[in-house]
Length: 157
Ligand code: RTP
Ligand code: MG
Image 1 (tube, rainbow, N blue to C red):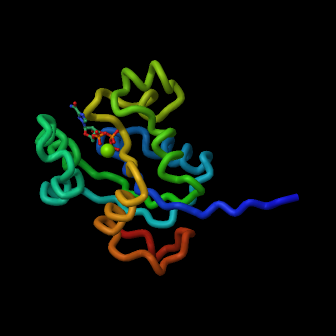
Image 2 (cartoon, helix red, strand yellow):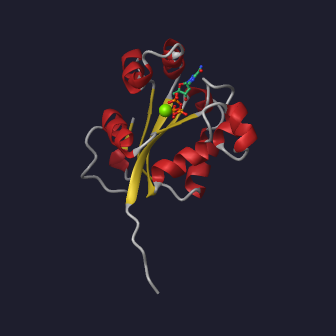
C-alpha cells in the first residue's frame, strides 16, 4: 500500500454581511462537514479603507463602490481554512459568483442556496494560493508560525 502525501493548503474564506444575518451557523457546519480545519477566525466590521484594499483588484470595475458599501454594511466572519487543495475546494463549495448561474450549475453550493444576487453573494474565497497568502496576511498578519488547529489565541475579536 502506498500512502501519498498531499501538502496542506490554506485559503481565506469570508462570510459576507448578507449571510451573517441568518446563515452563519449553517455555513460553519458546511465548512466542518467539508473537512476543512479552521486555524484562525475573526468577526469584524470592515472599514471602507479595508474593504477597498481587500478588493483592490476590482477598483476599476463599475460595481466597486457598491461592493465596498456592501462589505462594510455589517460584520464579516474571516476564516483561515486548511485542507489539501483548500483554495479550489472552498471555491467549489461557494459556487459561481452569480447565484442564478450557481442554481443552474451547482445547486448544492452555498451561493446557490443562500445568495441574493451577484453582489450580495454570501461568501468570499481566495482565487489562488498567492491571493490566499496576501489576503490572509492582510487580515490576520503573520501567522506563518502558528498551528493549523484553531486555539483560543487565534480567535481575534
Ligand atoms: P469573491 O472574490 O468575493 O470570492 O467573489 P468571486 O471571485 O466569485 O467574484 P469576483 O469577480 O472576484 O468579484 C468580487 C465580488 O464583487 C461582487 N460583484 N458584483 N454587480 C456585479 O456585477 C458584481 N460582480 C461582482 C460580488 O460580491 C463578488 O463576489
Ligand atoms: Mg474574487
